[in-house]
Length: 348
Image: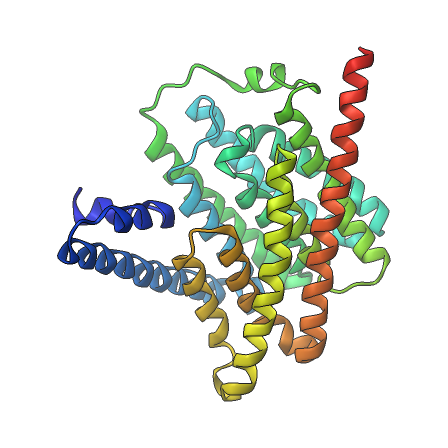
């Protein structure tokens, strides 16, 4: 494996090489490659989002995050169907992520929930056909981020332009990287494979219904940062209940640990470098292969932003409450939904 090829590995792949190292020299080499990969990735991400902020305004920096996420994922991940159709679907997904979160924010929580259900139905049924590729962690996360950081007026016009550019970049990279692959399935196959008795379809329906319901309840309770609860629920919903229970535990423990670590850093570090705590969290995520540790470090970036608006106490309280509510609600909802579907299947 060349230096460049090793740079393309994910965290789990790099750590697997470290475990298999037989000599100190070999292990040192793999550590060096791993650290270079994290440094290059962080530098590229920072530069990419900064450029988007300069072009489309600081309030649209989240557009840079969403576009970057899509580029990094879909340069390797596919949708499991013909490349041309997948490319058109990606363009449609960008339209949905651009328009629907903005419209939902203009509606009441209940009407907004219905619109979110319709939007997520398209994203998940056609973009997340294989749950173990975790495309929902890109598409649904992107949707929720744009929902949580909504803008209006001139800023929204700039957002339209930024998302159009992001769609063009993502579709170009996706088509270039996947055009020579052969797929036996097409868009019609995805429709025909919808089966309410399958674990995949039940998982998709849970994502489609539960995540907007979490957002709606959080907003009806006047909880700020409702997207945090939605992201927590999305992250916890998996096809198998044992996996869900594991994620719920790790999400709760990880967020509490992350809050504690962030608070310690907040009091130890000078106020002039508070914003860099989020970057530290990004580095931590890059070094983490396990979900629990990722939950810890993801907390840093969220709190670094929220503290500016709500203060440390308010941001910490919101983070814990929203995440616990999101994952617990998702676990209860999916348990009841899976049970109900199993009862219906027996009746059929």
